[in-house]
Amino acid sequence: MNYPGESIVLHLNNSPFSTRAWRENWWKEWGSDIEGQRVVGERSCESIFYLHRYQWRYLPIKSLQFIGTGDRCLSTPRAEYLALPSDANVGLLDSLFEVEWTEAVFRDLVAGQESYELLLFWARTREMYLRTIHTDSAYQISLKGDFSGYLSRLGPNTRLKLYNRRKRLTSMGSVREELWSVAPFLELLNQFHSKRWGTPCFNSRSLRFQRRFLADIVQEGGRPELRVLMVNGEPVSGLYNLVLGGCVYNIQSGFLENYGKDIALGTLHLGYALEDAFACQGPAWFDLLAGQGKNTDYKRHLATHETPLVSLMIVRHPFYRFMYRMLDWWKSFRF
Image 1 (cartoon, rainbow, N blue to C red):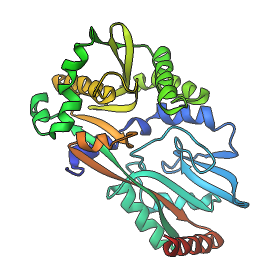
Image 2 (cartoon, rainbow, N blue to C red; image 1 turned 180 degrees about the vertical axis):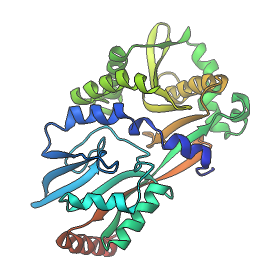
Image 3 (tube, rainbow, N blue to C red; image 1 turned 135 degrees about the vertical axis):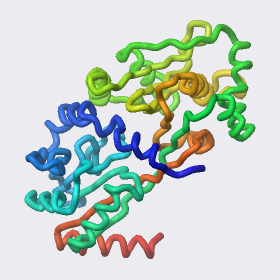
């Protein structure tokens, strides 16, 4: 497994989650009903944050966060590869002191990259308390070379699930792929997730957000690919892919579980999408993002590259610095 190189970082810094389409539509949907305030100003570091006021364990919290991300009291679609503006520096970060906040949360930063290192330096030199509140890994597949070469480098079990089981699927009937429009596709994903997980993939608010986002991302060069795998005219799997900036992002997926003996429909459908991506001259990466499967860590087995993600909390207020230090100290003994 390889770790991020220069070419990967280029697409990580221009992900869908950093676009105007994502941030503005997120704010339209969730900014109006939280006790929040958008932090606006001429400086670039101010324009991408909001201040969320809420109570946590009876304590008043004023949390500074990236627009487009949720928190303890606000569940929204996950956004990854978040970063500060390219011109950010310590002076620009200091401008955030003009806003009254107790803590700042920076979710899913790429570990080791400029934004991450700058925030570490800023927190330490300004004597704030720095916490790592979550770590994860995102997974990418390099599209350099051809599909057959990629398959040859996979383990035998992974290759079986991704490609070789096609014969078994085609023996069950006519197999084809279709591109669907947004509304019926998102409804299909909800049906798949409800059957498999007992809850839909998108609630009514997330549905509204996703529709607006997919409509607006086209203006920033994005191209939705809402792929549906059909067997005998029946939809059995869906891939919510987005092509943007030389990368195919697999944002969400859903499928019928236990469909045929030894057939992993979700992985098999990814195989069709990957084969098309290798054959296309445009994208250089296929990004599986973060997250694990229900039964296996399939993304790790498919990936050629792994990107570590870190979520940081920077605590400004003296009382909360003390409180979190005690909390972290207690956790270190408990666990």
